[in-house]
Length: 253
Ligand SMILES: *[C@@H]1O[C@H](CO)[C@@H](O)[C@H](O)[C@H]1NC(C)=O
Image 1 (cartoon, rainbow, N blue to C red):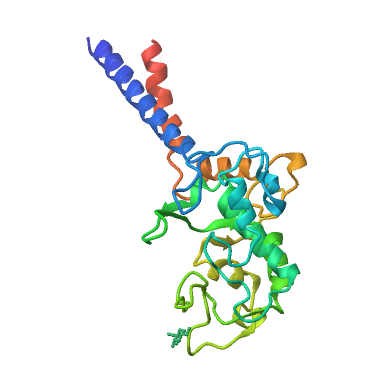
Image 2 (image 1 turned 90 degrees about the vertical axis):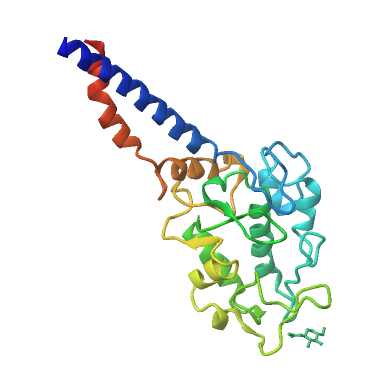
């Protein structure tokens, strides 16, 4: 009698546990292959044959339209009217990193694990602490260290009265290398922690690449999957197995 009761309870436990594991796994899958709810993103990712210039690597599966990809290459484009040249012309070798940053932001369907609610009028969701590959951040800093800006955080505090962002009163134009002493300062502070500087290398599968060769597929697919399963708020997957195994075996008796 006691044995049968135990067996019954074990079976129920196992079923409940499996259900919980399935739900947890479904929740993790739901951050893969998604577009954030922001100003220009598509509802769902999909093929975009005509993506422009530096955004072309995402053409097999993208959250941006061709029109958005063109805007990503233009200073003061219709996208955000944002002016990279607020302290004089930005050198091309630096500007290409900002274009690539915009392409990643607008086009990538692999930023799901880092999407958070945003409390702003112009977008409902934002990215936070996307682990950027060491080399991508360092090259960005290297190519921009002699470019000039008046602000550390480019998300807020501009003077928009003219319709585009201008340096607010009380700020001065200085080289990036003074405003952002280290690569991490640039990558993390410029977009209020959208990116996190990491020591992970390109190709490691542990960091997001702003730049990649689409001939070898999009390396960020595997990175998103890894962090969805093993991220900081990762669920108790190994626990579930340990808890489930004994009752599951018992219920087979
Ligand atoms: C913003 O710029 C306008 C000129 O376009 C100027 O009159 C105003 O004082 C500026 N405001 C601040 C806070 O910098």
